[in-house]
Amino acid sequence: MIPEDNRFESDPASVIPEDHPLPEGWEPGPVDGGDAATVARLRDLLRAHEAAGRGWAGASEDDVRVEVSDHGLATRENVVVRDTAGTIRAWGSVHDRAEGRMLFVHVVDRDLDDDTALACSDVLFEWAEAQARSVGEGRGLEVQQIDTGAFAGDDRQHRFLEGAGFTKVRTWWQMSRPVTADEATLVADPAGWERKGVRFRLVGREDDGMPDESCLRAVHDVLEGAFTDHFNSAEETFDEFIHRLREDPGHRWDHWWLAELLDDPEAPEPVGALVGTVSESDDGPDGSYVSYLGVLESARGRGVATGLLRTIVADAAARDRDRVGLEVDADSPTGADGLYVAMGWETRYVTESWHKDVPVR
Image (cartoon, rainbow, N blue to C red):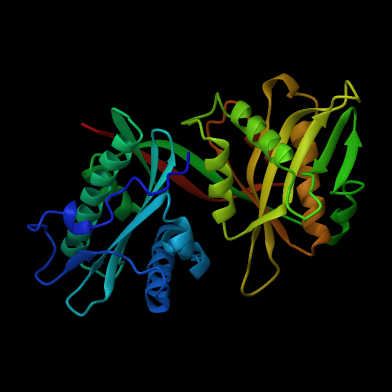
């Protein structure tokens, strides 16, 4: 459940020892997410991190605000390291993602020398482990997992992670597919269409324009069921699921689709779901992104995944977007990558998951 107060330690001084390894005058401290200069600085650090790790930057201030704004603080906490001039040189953010799983953003200024960068990194890791113990205790766990990521070519980040006791556990292909205007007719209507006994439709709306809760619960139930055999699957309550997805800067209710079997027309059975988002661009057309695509095992082989993908491509074309992106597990048990490649997706870059299990007591 979403806690009334977050499960983290909000005061960095309470979890980072005074004899930290930072240079004299450098101090860890809290983040003021309402300060425009702070958000801009964190954006710049994150963009430099991306450029060094994969060759190009894409982060925006909205991506930073997801981590540091008051809206997200029910499930997140942040720390920064400032130098003697007060400039932020490192940033850590933790997210109480789901039972047993805490996400960790770890960013260190790329302009620092190796020794200073390592000192900043060590402080971020020490802080994150203390936060893992705190959130794990709040959830009543014996062990709390820290889940963080790295770009496949980021040797510096790999050294930091290995030195802190993290293990690389998974590889992910970040894929993209171009979209052309004529693909708007790829399906009859992205809002609703049928094929071979399967109906694909947007989630329903109430009179006030908000989505029908029963549809949202159907999406949640399908995704929970579809991912039980996937890597690092963690049970997430409906409230946690909705709260987290609404925080995404690209979130739009009209990018959520259900697939239903019509074997019994009087009782359509939800068996597939796709949650899409908008990938905004400052210098060209926006794109669409497949945040989640799941099909229940009982319905696999009936063209459900293909139909949902065709739907989001047609929707993107109708909105004058030029691409659809997605992430796929390089070791997916469903062989999803084969479907994506067959439908025109190509790997743009590669990321990795790194984990560390922290005893809570």
